[in-house]
Length: 159
Image 1 (cartoon, rainbow, N blue to C red):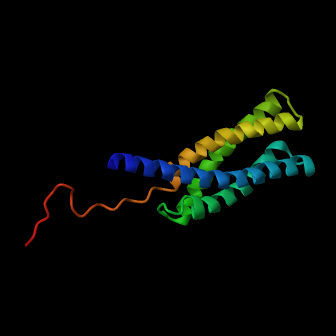
Image 2 (image 1 turned 90 degrees about the vertical axis):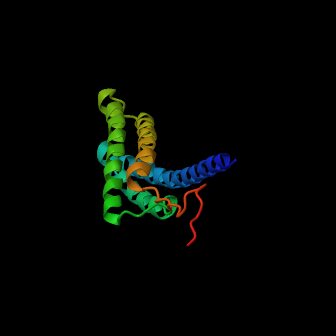
Image 3 (image 1 turned 180 degrees about the horizontal axis):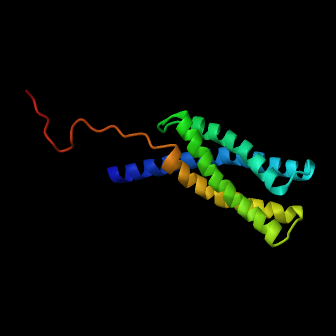
């Protein structure tokens, strides 16, 4: 019975964490795609430049949202370390997005807003999968579990 309870608790924790990650991600998504479209089609900046700037702004928001809400229960291994790793891993996710957009625009020669935005969405989706896995693995580390003072099924010693 204890096994089932632990499995349920772990699943419930994962669902809560995933819900928070998804909420922060949805807001960052709006910042990223909105910024990308504003910079590219509103201000007529370059496609890849627009993507980089929009992603950096969205990533900064996502870091603080994830650090202080999604993963606040996890160990804090130092702001500088976390921030560096967070941006490094987001750089990999950005590269995934840039490859998708660049492939559509420069290889397939699709320049219309719909095609570019579909490529952007594919890149964001693939990048999100990478980020969720990598944040848990390297950035927001699991809290160390307390070691029980006594082992179960072992008699306590009295003096």
